[in-house]
Every structure is written in C-alpha cells, then in structure tokens.
Image (cartoon, rainbow, N blue to C red; front, side, top):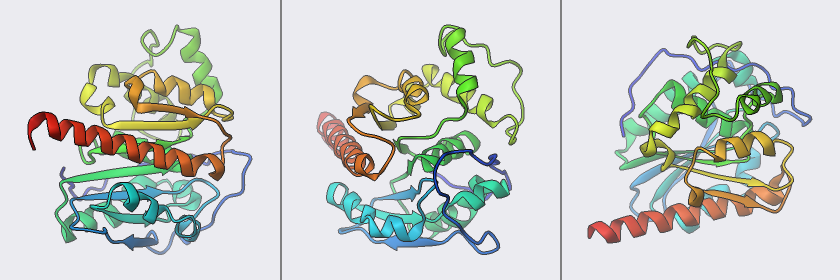
Length: 259
C-alpha cells in the first residue's frame, strides 16, 4: 500500500438518522487511540465509529482487543471521526492527513485496512473513492449508504448493472451519494477491489435494502447477513465474523502460494 499527503477533500452532508449523535471538537485533530499489536505488526486497522459512538465508546466496547483475537499482527487505531467532522465537509481528507499518513510514516505496514460501523462504513467507502489504491481492504459493518430515493432509482432501472448514473461530477455534499454508487457500480469490472471488501449486516436492519444492493457487487463468501438490528448486539458478532473469515481467506491464499 501507499499513502501520500493530499489536499483532496471528502465532503459529506449531515445524515438525518433517527439516532443520537456523538460530538467532537473539529478545531482539534481527530482524536485517536493506539492499540499495539500482540506480536510483530504487519498491518494496520483503522476503526471508524457509527453516528452514536465516539473514541471512548469504541474503547469501552473492546474493539481493539477483538481485532487482536483474530489478527494478532495488527496495530489498531481507534479514530474518533464523529459526525461534526463529516458536517465540516473534510472528514475523509482529515482522516487521510491526520491519521493514515502519519501512521504509515511511523511504521511500514504490509497492509492497511479501514473498518467502519454504520456512518463509519460510509466513511471507509468514501475514503476509498477519494483516495483509490491507498488502502488494502475494508471491513464494513451495517454501512449507511445514503437515501432511499436513489436506491429506488437504481432498482427502477433494473439494478446497478443497468443504472445510468449520468455525467460524472465532482464529489460534493450534493453529489456524493450518486458518485458513491457510481464508484460501487464499477466494482463489477474490478475484482481486485471487490475481493478486498467484507460486509456484514443484520436481517432486521432499517438500511437493509441499500446494504443488500452493495452486497450484489461482492463475492458471495464476503457477505454475511446475521440476525439482528442496527445496534451493538449485532455489530460485535458481525465484526468477529468478518475478521475470522478474512483471516481464513488470507491463510488459504498463503498456503496455495507456499508463503
């Protein structure tokens, strides 16, 4: 992987979700907490919270320790990229400049992954859209994927394979949803990207329709629909499931190549 400093921005409009919103001081750097690997680190996982969570809640949930149970060679950075940073319109650019670039400079990693829950899953997708090729994989848990109106437009067209997104536009608060789905649509021609994305969500998710549309762009064995709603009762086992299966695939790939 490679990371380069950039002034590109990753704007996002405020999301009108029926949930509480974690705060944050956008005049200060994105708050982070480093959880070092249990053994010699070979990869980095940056975890992004959902709308109602922050750095302290990610820590209290033991997400860093859960990642280490499955990936003991991973340094973990919990990033407090909360809603105020998205509302500022520079969440993705700041994530790049304040978290990922400094981490890559401090330590060489063979792989860098983004993991995100709900709003954080959207943040991970937006990062890969704005900074293509900078991360090696994504773990998406119940990602928020925009308004239902655009989903209905895509469904009316017969799905992503037939949907016409229209002229490509700059990635702005007004266009990000259409451009995000255009980017996901292109995964059909990019098996390298779709094979590096893992998705888990609940069978009672309020965003299940849009998440299911994303799932059509991924290998079937990278998608897990689990029993549950859009909350931590689902998200903890979902994170564990993705980590386990991504680890197993990596081991199988290494065995097949003799590495």
